[in-house]
Structure formats: C-alpha cells, structure tokens
Image (spheres, rainbow, N blue to C red):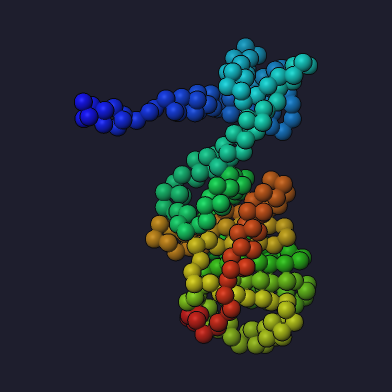
Length: 284
C-alpha cells in the first residue's frame, strides 16, 4: 500500500500547466501575434486589423475571438480592440522569446554565463537591434559611434584595439566628452598606444576627470554606449567575450529600451568595479 502511495505521489501533476497551455496555444499563430503587435500601439477595429494583416474579415474575426477567449485582448463598446492588462504583460515577455528565436543560431554558440538574472529577465529590451558580424565591421561601427556622440562614451571591453584609442582620445579633447571605461584584469592593450597617449595628453585628461577608468576581475558582457547609441557583446560558450559580433541600436529605434538595458548594466558594473591598476594589463 505504501509503495502504491509513493508511486501515486511521483506522478507529475500536469494539470498545473493547463492554463499556460491554453495561452501558448492561443499565441501559437503568426497572425494572432501580429494582431497583438498591431493593437499594442493603438486601439484598432476589426476592419483596420484585417486591412493591415491583408486577410479576410472572417479570418481576423476568428483570431480576435480566440484572443478574447484567452483574456489577452478586449473590445470596447465602439468596437475597438485593445490589450488587456494581462495581454500587455504577455506581449512585453514575447519580445524576449522573439529576440532569442530570431538569433537562435547565435545563442547556440554564445551564452549568458554569469550575467545577473535581472538582465536576462529583461532580455526582450534587446529585441529591436541589429546583429553585426566581423571584427573589422564591429570596430568600424564603434568608431562611428564615437564620431556621432556629443556628450559621453562609456565602455566595457576585454581589449582596446589601437584604432579605437586613436579615434577616441582626439574626440574627447575636441568635444569635451566624458569617457568612462572598464577593463578586466589582463585586458589586452597595444604597446604602441603608450607614446600616442602621452603625446595626446592622456594624463592631463585623467587629472581633469574627463577620463575615468576602473577595473574588474573579469567581464562577461561587452558594452559601448553614447547618449545616442549602444551596443552589447555576449560571451562565447567558453566564457570569453566575442568581439566579432555585436547587437546594436540607435536610441530612436525603440524609445530607448535597448539603450536603457546597456546603461543600467554599465552603471552597475561601474559601481562595483575596483580601482584601476595599469600593471594588471597585458601589453601586446
């Protein structure tokens, strides 16, 4: 008898997922997902939704009913459809699934190792971004970011290529930019940069507070951001940041969501970083 009770207890209670299954079933349709996207921006009528989707009113009506039955959307007395509070929360989380699905090949070779869970939970903020690949293309994009900025440059990088040093320092001087950078222990620094930095008055920029720098044991995410743009780099499976790929975004693309994610991440790392020690860098 005791054995039977133990076996009965061991049977997983699948019914706890019944409501979740219903929601996933309702969302498992590209047209219904498109409807949620359309009405997330403005209330719409059946006719206008049908027109935007380029499908029949009958098919649109069927999809709207399915979403209403799942309490994802609602219709007011004038016939306009909008998201419920529940639906609004769902679509905000769909962004994360959409981002990961769109880049599933990338994330089969990269991971979120050691990234704080609160940033993983907000990963949907990166949905409206562009993926750029190739080390040269990445460096050129960062250089353009530098040229386009007018206020500040913040960065967390595993190494500092000579091209970036040659681009950033003159701009910091000319435009009175604020430059904050974080480097990990053993970060690669070009030996050739020393003479250039001395000639450009790097020490004076440090004394004036125009350049600030801190150090961390290791970095699990690369960040570069200005007041207008931001980019993020993720680590490979083995844990090292891959500077051959960036997700990037201009602040006007998504009302600043991507930028805010990068800014929050940088500020948290900066707050917890240690005093900069140039003797812990690796010159190459």
